[in-house]
Image (cartoon, rainbow, N blue to C red; front, side, top):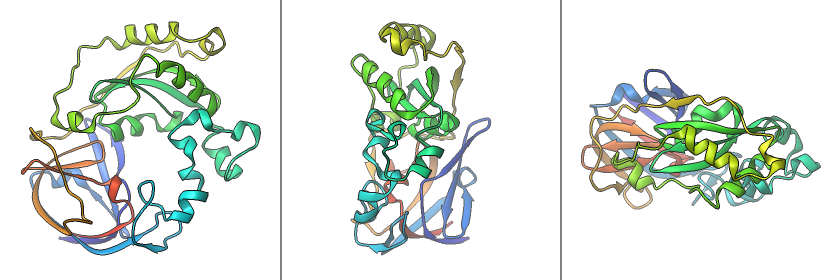
Length: 265
């Protein structure tokens, strides 16, 4: 079978395990069904901005042209640093977009991907966020009415917890699962100021996520279509936004947002 077109990051759903769906052209491929299959992926040199569709030579912030990188609300610096969000003050690149995103309830959470980390996401996006990070378990610490407040809590907790995933370690599957997330949540809550403690969520539900992976690489090697425009390999797993192949190479789908690829399987 064949499929071709511009790709964007895989859509996800949690069932018995993390399920991945790759948008490519006008199709959506259920990638889990391809595990154990040999894939040939080709890049002919075309990249299009994921926001405006303009053909570009390189992407900024995983898929944008330079102009959209500077103007699109999806590329605002507050996406990475939520404490910078000012939409609660009526300041945003796009207030209509902010009403649907930044001014909605947000969660501050602890998750284990490569190690224990703190993060922020829109409340309705929690499970997808964890799957995108390759988290194997997670717990909500706090719920806030907007992104800015969640960012303030994260800033306080980043003094004591990591806030980034070591993607190489995450992809080797060599992860410490010994953390007691309920105890870690209690510890995190005690670190907050009285003003921020009122947003602590009392629900202590722990979500565990399994990934369909036949084997993990011992040493991760990245595929970069700007350097190597064609690749063939047997797919042995999917975790976070990475396809894992039997030769220990991995393909970061999100890094290639907007690339026009041909997929044969």
